[in-house]
Length: 222
Image (cartoon, rainbow, N blue to C red; front, side, top):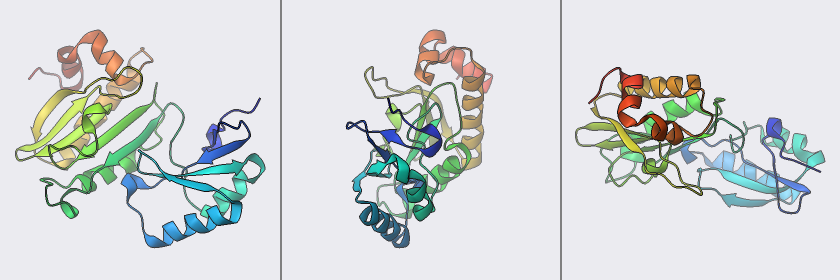
């Protein structure tokens, strides 16, 4: 029986014959040349396209024997849509575009994407970076959610959607710089990687409590 092909970023579809792939589009930011190329490849191989919740373009209907050729024609890196890894860093437009944004979520989010996208972890992880408290990147239901506001960056941890939704809990607030946020995220990821439990980050926080988790990450309680 056919299965997902992790090394090719290919997810077996309902027909149990064809696969879906998704080129990596960091934070959903792309250009017209890339979009034209994706459309040309879709036309060439008769594929269906869908914009995904992870800010990627999924390409459906790829035959197994054509996977290598499709990726060669795309000349793009696969998006981490499957596997035990950092799946996506969802990013809102931020101050570069949005009139409501307070902080530059695009700048911070793309830095996080460069560091963490597809990083292998004990379980899947999703991140969201929002430039204001409206949190259009759904930061509150991400394993690591970051929200900008008038006093700085807020970091939430342990959120997820899925069959047992969980809201993220505030780890630290009023962080002043992107560099400081990156340091906090690095510590969260390191603590998670080294913990023996194999569930999502929210499960670890449920087991030990947010205060104990905060001490592990920051070395202090707020």
